[in-house]
Length: 328
Image (cartoon, rainbow, N blue to C red):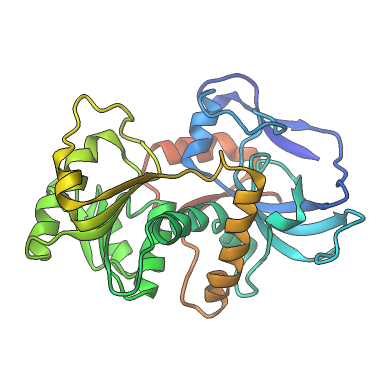
């Protein structure tokens, strides 16, 4: 098998394609030949040495999701067979040609999607589903603010919320990204370079605010996130791309609005917790891809050998949707 290995912390140039020993499954595991994987912001942090992998998983091979074909099954596996097309959330090792996955972390690949499209589902859709539905109990007809509307998590969250007839606000740094997001169901696009999102939301909601805020930016948006929340609103912090340290924090709005603040991350959870989220998603959400309700938005596809170029492209922050690596 081959893998893109981080040889030392640093820039995109630190990747090297290496030959590695073949894998064997445990009793409850399968070996999957990876056809495609997708980049995530966490991969950039891992490349810099700032995002350690869970115990038992190599730190030097990123990759949090994949699509592929099962090539070998463990002796106790009964629900999966050789040749099955699957997708999975991974703790790492997605930047390889093969990976070992526990059977409970597998999901059937939607029949209507290509491997490239399917590879972009697990991390972002599970993150958005967990944040909005499991952490914030978003229900039909509520309103939600989604930051980084052009990101993988953003495009997934917009579609999930729109499928529930929710009013959606989204922020992005270009009108082009916001126009593309509107095609996915975004109700109101807000260019954060030219507008204050809290001002726009309060204007459009007649001062009420939104029920849910999904935030991947962090500290710089704290005050305006609280201003944007309605009474009994819920703020869920999924990431902190803009910073994770608050110089000050205005807490009064939390009490006045009886607001809830939650933090969430999939990677650091126990196996049982992650398996429960995966199986619930597979039953509740995954069928919506074959029905055409949800789609996987692919921005660009790179071969695994061009992983450095793929990372440089992600760092440019020009993509709308997922950046995919394929094994050719």
